[in-house]
Length: 377
Ligand SMILES: *Cc1c(COP(=O)(O)O)cnc(C)c1O
Image (cartoon, rainbow, N blue to C red; front, side):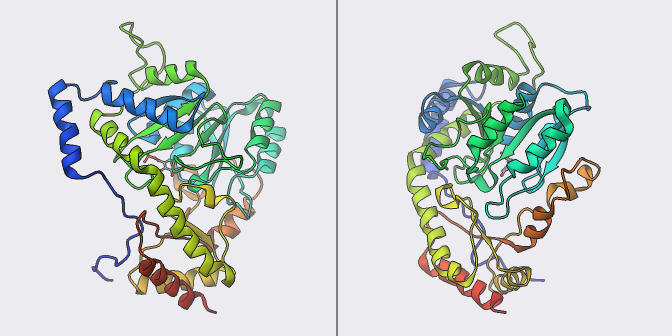
């Protein structure tokens, strides 16, 4: 046991200068408008719509989890526990939890080995087997990496007439293979602006959609389901984004382009050193916002050796997503499509390395040296 702080932390969020945040807060106090769709929230909403590009319509949220909950209800409908929503097991638990809050049951599909992203074949198998019991698909652009087969996903969901919701939580700033930003696929895409994500405002989130009516329903849903003064028109909750977080978001958007270039440069340095040694990266990671550098080791022994060497050098690294969601106690009895063989065989080889938006070559070299030393079996 060591109580020393890491020499290289896993993430290192960069926030606006305290004076800038203070100036924004003074403006908020002047207007006496702290939340409930104030001027900062409105400008932030417009700016994220512009970032994604036409025809994007946005609803901001207090965080991505309430955004997923509201979007799950609006896109899949409120269920009575009898239907399932397909989701990969290899992801963060919030998506599966949102499915359950919406009254459906999560049903886990496998991933593709090269991309670590949910497998279209697994979803097709589930749709064939469960038919109308499937209320929808919650596709995860895991690690904020765009699914390279998004066209096939949309076609599959259209063929079976099931709605497609996309969890792009870490992917604000990522692009699909055709160069378009994440945010315009499926019925809607959900983003997180948590302090740990590349686009960080503390707590915050957003749903982006091509459908202006869905965006309007989501703005209502996050405000108790109210519309104007007429009370609850739908199942709502309180998911509103505060003005101060929107103000931070506006300043973060000004520097997001530079932050993304910095992150992609770090990833590139890791790849140049580690790919010759047999490590690989998930397909499409270079076009992502690079929330961290997820690498796939040649073997579990290499991954575990590298992890031990990193820990000994006081460098923080993570084993995502371990355990995968189907192994979490709450989801233990949920349907699995097939035996999730790729999820189970891959999770032990994945190692996520630290990425900071302004990370020195000295730091990335130290990370690489530890990985090389530990994995040289
Ligand atoms: C971070 C993350 C979330 C949760 O976002 P919050 O804003 O913290 O609620 C959900 N899904 C995925 C895939 C994530 O990476």
